[in-house]
Length: 78
View 1 (cartoon, rainbow, N blue to C red):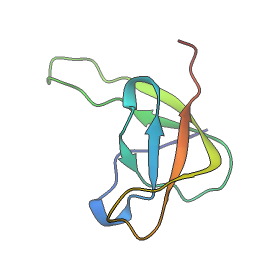
View 2 (cartoon, rainbow, N blue to C red; view 1 turned 45 degrees about the vertical axis):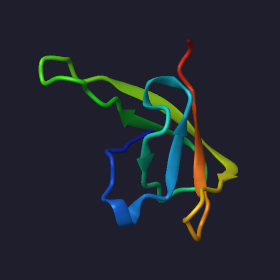
View 3 (cartoon, rainbow, N blue to C red; view 1 turned 120 degrees about the horizontal axis):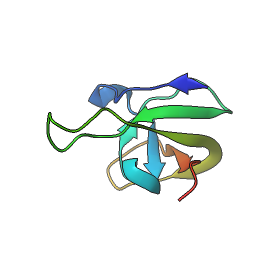
């Protein structure tokens, strides 16, 4: 399992779908596996948490983006 942190704007090639990081854009360098993504904190007092996301073959297109994002689906139980 790999751990990711949000990437710089130009490096973002993946989007988290579902779970606590829904909509978060990040960067992935691999085609398969499960990643650990830091959950965005709403205040500095919140503890640091992570959520697991599965890399899929699915791609998500957004207006204004030349390349589609890799879809990362939430892998933790609800």
